[in-house]
Length: 348
Image (cartoon, rainbow, N blue to C red):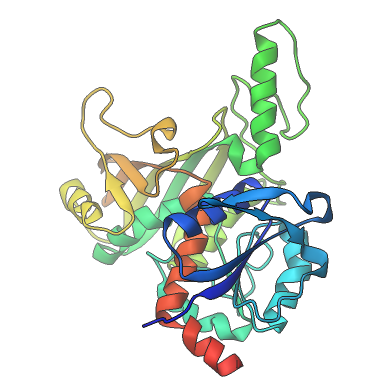
């Protein structure tokens, strides 16, 4: 699609960690925007945020008129999106929402561009597109190429999720508790349920009636909505003392045979996937290695001999980039290629 002029884009939640990443990635990838507006809560009005070589002053989301804004990237929290995303959509602004608010609405597309870009056809239902959960995104980017070779029957996944998934306050709590350890002091947990410094917590979000947490439920429900409703998923989600970067130990049972060599070759040829799988010390990616990178990294690909058609792998990604901001910008880029211009013409 040829473009002679750029869009007016709003970033909602611009003063937060994900909002800052959205602005950075929009600039890095030269998204066709002639005007970018930073929106935040009233307490951040006037605060400067970076957009490429420029600084933007945050404007008040509450009073902002979305008329004339063609695209809005939201990451302000689900309760805020619940109010303002429909308000933006009513002004013919296409919303890409990073919160959990709209993910499970049947008429709203939940999209990972490398996995199900065709679901963007649904955007006209409500002019809202939802960004999946960070842990789901990286898992499905790694599994979709394998699903194309052999249908997936069952997934068992254990996640090792960074404190950055809980925002700046989560990272600050890890930092502050770690400092206290070296002076023989303790800092009671506020963000997390137990002390996160030098500890792992198998509890993210609230507990559900069946004993799973909502984070685990999200991985099940989102995988079925995005990839295939027939896939069975069992997830255990764990918060670990890392600032940025989620890791996952993923075990997959396929309907038919898929060798580890064929899986490795397929992943090497797949968009968004980087394979580093050397069977020697250090021949794999860790959470620290992935920080600031766009790819989903796959290591430790091997046979699971406990089932007929099983593979195990280690999947790592920067949760603030591909797990949130980058995926949202990639959705915007896909909309630019596929739909956005036509939708704007229709609206006008």
